[in-house]
Length: 255
Image (cartoon, rainbow, N blue to C red; front, top):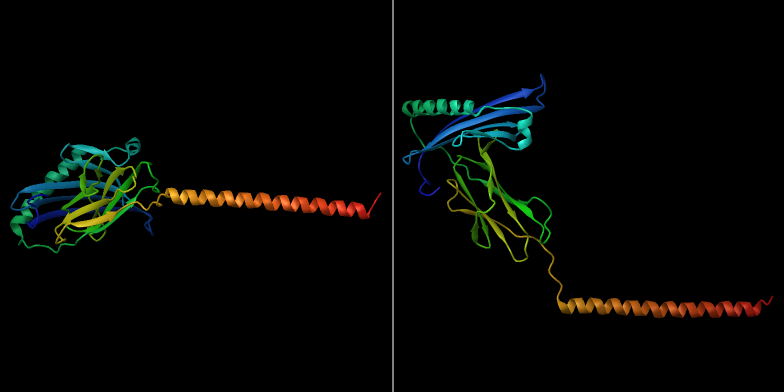
């Protein structure tokens, strides 16, 4: 993203929707693709994605020229030739050139992202977990997402999804950070976007119970021991009292 902020962006986007059901659409298959160029840097990229009910099924890595399945199991049920997406990308690039020559260029309204950070599972000390940074409702599709642990940038194990289109033509994106909860650690998801005047930091730290001090543990043990001793004394008194009552009853009612 270095040097990319504030430069004009030209975007060509296409969205195809197919619904299942004649009267009421219950399920939706969508194909989304776009080609964009940042000027005057002349940096270009694009995307080709197919989804089902707003969830990704696969996307095509246009650089590696291969189909990437959201879950490996999906490839067992269907097939997609990456070359089709490459052909579409070439067509989009050609159309983009034509549109740039024929149209007046003006800066579109940017929409800043909404950001949430949350763990995949309930947080337990020492148990491996995954933090999710959910970046939503932003436009255009030029963004930087960075993880920080205790203020230091983290890159190991970080995974990031492609851009997911929304019905209002804005985008959403996920970034995942595997981590092991450790007392004292804190995390930040840093998001940079043209709609933000400064990078946005979304803070997160595990909500863990405070460790009991030695004095507290000693007090708890002492209270537990005292309660146990009192219980023994009270129980002994009750037993003796019951024995005396039984003895007195036997003396009043001799056989």
